[in-house]
Length: 140
Image 1 (cartoon, rainbow, N blue to C red):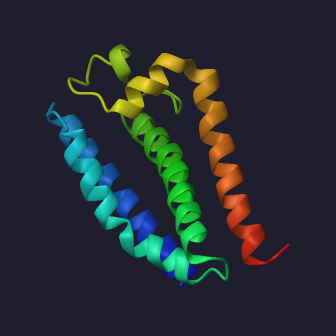
Image 2 (image 1 turned 180 degrees about the vertical axis):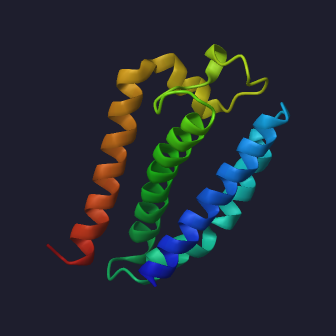
Image 3 (image 1 turned 135 degrees about the horizontal axis):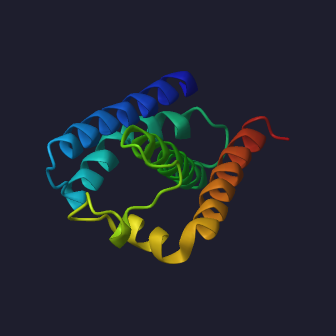
């Protein structure tokens, strides 16, 4: 189930990259509230699969699975989307991005705290959540 969850997760990520990049090329505004809800629904299968394939308590494993996917999605989506548009990996739109007319709340927040703290939060969150998932999976 973990392999299926991982494939599903990266398929959703690829789909969102394609959708956002296509909209950006056409200078179309992205409704971030709507796409966030769609992404949450589309990631339910991978969350369930990550949760059910883990030997831990269901509630805490579900929370961990959501956090793990959130941090990995934030890192990979933002970085790859930025590179596709010609920006560096850690570029955060916010008010600094003239191509964005409607910025996501996360982009606004990350732009306000600055690159250093964005990197600390995203990388630490990713390492901790994935690390705990792996360590508790193997009961290390």
